[in-house]
Structures are given as structure tokens and as C-alpha cells.
Amino acid sequence: MEVLYDSLPIMCDSFYVMLLREDLSEMKKFVPRMKYLKSTFDTMAIEYREEQVVYRQQMLLRNLQKDYKKILKYSEKSRLNIKRLEKGKTIYDYGRDEQENKYCYVTVLCTKNRKEYELKYLAILLNGHWFVGDELKLVKL
Image (cartoon, rainbow, N blue to C red; front, side, top):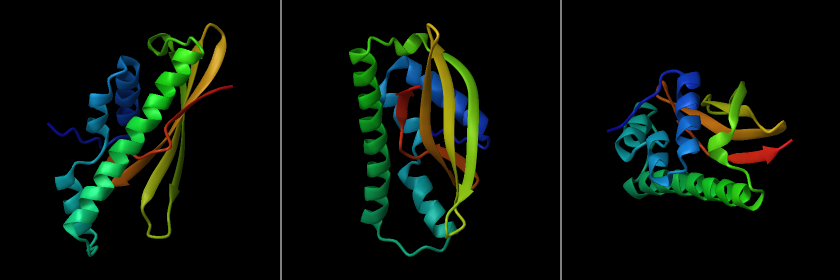
């Protein structure tokens, strides 16, 4: 079942909860599905070929999963239990590209044993719904 988020803060909260579970399969919920990408291209009157849509959707998902694996590897190496991270303030940095597409750089401040971390990623707005784009990182401050 496809979940669409009209509100960026609600999508961000759901994404954070999913990250704590350490389950790569749930990542698909936050990437636009093929059917949705096709309708978005149709709505924006963008010329596309079927394989371009497939490629774009698969690359979004693969890059997000790859970045998440890096976070899991980093947490294991630094002995950080992701499930115990305490969520703090969320910072939203909105922007638009040349084609007037809206996006937002999301930064979630987290703490664990008085150590501070930043969870960062790019969120994209497609046809009025928010999805996670890429650039997923967990950085110690």
C-alpha cells in the first residue's frame, strides 16, 4: 500500500521512526512508486520513456538504501545504538530549482549520552506529496 504524505513534518517523523527499526525493506514507503512517478511526469507534461521512469525510481531507492547501509555500518563501527538516539529539533531548509520543483533539506538533531548527531537528507515534493530523495547521512557533531 502506498502512503502519501501531504505534510513534510509528518513524513519526517515517520521516516525517523522507520530508521530506528533498521529495516531496509520499509525504505520503499518513502520513495515514489512507478505509477506515481508516471502520473507526476504526465501532470508536468514532461516527455519521458518508460525505461527512464523505471531507472529514476530504482536509482532513488538504491541510493537511499546504500546511504542507510553506510549509516548502519558507521553506527556499528562507533558502537552507536541507533534505536537509542533521542530525537531533538528538526530543521527545514526549503528551496526551489530552476524548473520550480520544491525540495527541502531536512536536518534532525539527535542525542545519545550527551553526544550530538545530525541526521540529514533531502525531501522532494512531487504533485503535492513529500518523498525522501537522497543524501541521507548521520554525522557526529
